[in-house]
Length: 508
Image (tube, rainbow, N blue to C red; front, side, top):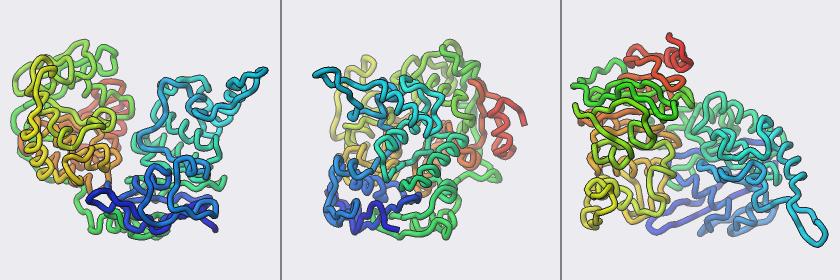
């Protein structure tokens, strides 16, 4: 079967690094072609070449039978290529129909004037929403009122609206529940039946085995090979992706016994003003990692935001090392030794226009400033020293410390954020979905870093939707449902079944 798109010997260089080294990739009608590789392997760069955002330094692209040295964004879109990025490109303050037809509004003539044909736009939007199983939403619903999974469906509807032939989905399941993942897979199978080609980028190997047909594996900007998914085990995928076997991905084992010290952090009867966290009480011992499990909307992130000062509390107390803290905003949290690695690293984890050096040192500089962070001078030599130390300690892979953090892979962006808090000298660090969109090799590194922090006396709290991650990493696991803690398990007594039951408000 003739491919819809072929990329041959694609090469892309940036200063000091070869991002793509003669990569071959193609997509056939009616298939899901998985693109797999560690963070920094070149997957996103290859897709940006396909979208026309990057111009390659070598190779050719065959689209609709024509050969090009490079594509432009217009040519890529005209050729039927649509990319749904991990950071969704919907506009929250527009409604669903406006998002779908943005820049391509259906028009009609009213005398000499051309005006938007809202009747046609509504009718077409209703048809598209039905196609992506979102018929319970009206075309005039604001996208800001949708869940993440519903926003993804809007992105898919946008692709279908203009007859995309190849739809690229970059980490589409990273923020979805298992039920939402299965609904997405139903849509993907429908697209396959219609003869669309789907490029599926994911680090969740079990999903790849379920939804993929072929798989192309990349490593360090190079082409490893293309295989039938059915011919590879998950162990094969890991070995080909990282070039070695990853054993003990989750560093903690229930049979290992860590020495815990005194209670170093306590949350007492915390309730948020909006009621999304109610009467939360727990403690954290020095040397342990405490996990938080629960369904989406259970109140885990909301609880952490209230502790961190990013959301107002109605009542409750927070104690760190025997001292009651007053925290009304994240700056006060920083000054008193609390940091938070947020779930959405691109929006709230680092500054897009800052270098790695500046992003690593910013919290340290703010902590030393006065007047709530408004008064303070930067010290370039000190910034350089801090950044070089964290780069070496955490093994951040970057072209230079002056490179923009936004240009790094997801895993290295996460390391920069971690470096920021380490440079600031926090005593308690909250991780919200710390390995979201991160490959198995980098996950292993981050788990080791987290265990090292706990062993070094820094408090570690982890919110995660992945039960194997919590069971493998944490010493105790608190389960939340409907804004409350329903159970707290020692990890030796916890199972996925117990966590799932407690997450529904039941006890095991």
